[in-house]
Length: 223
Image (cartoon, rainbow, N blue to C red):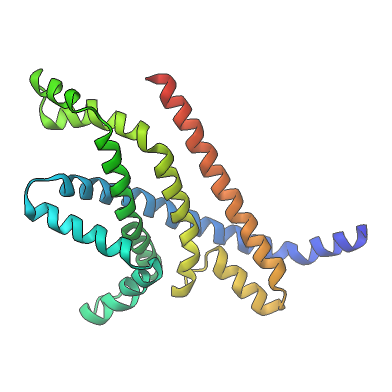
């Protein structure tokens, strides 16, 4: 029994380097997509809350379209559709980051909107009465409270973004799922590599969840 375990470890060991590099790529794509999605989500929330139709209608259309279509279709539109229409081809990495950021941004916008709605209107009126500009009010009064409120929902969306990197195997990005597929095609041992991929995703998402929990507790103590 011990010999068989040792033999298995020796057999699987060469693939661990590939899985490590694939996990790094998944984390890079996720980090960039998450940061960009937060910016998109905040701008979209402000646009949807605007009284001007010029800002509100595009924001509403964006949320409606993205939430109503599969993420995989959105990835294909950006990677295959945009070059077909414009002639400008994006690299798989850039297209993957853009697609996941756009896909997540619509959900982030709704998370931000729920956070803004949770802020009592009296705080806004008080800040304006004290002579604060809208920018100062947003930076010092509204956003700090919104961030504290939306941390759990934003964590869930960040985890979804990380898991959705598995869809990028369809546009040849060698992340965790793609490396597992290549390895099982070479060895014809799907169980080993799919379980390994699942464990890697579990580890990454657990670390992300623990970090978010730590930040939420730290932030609640500071305020």
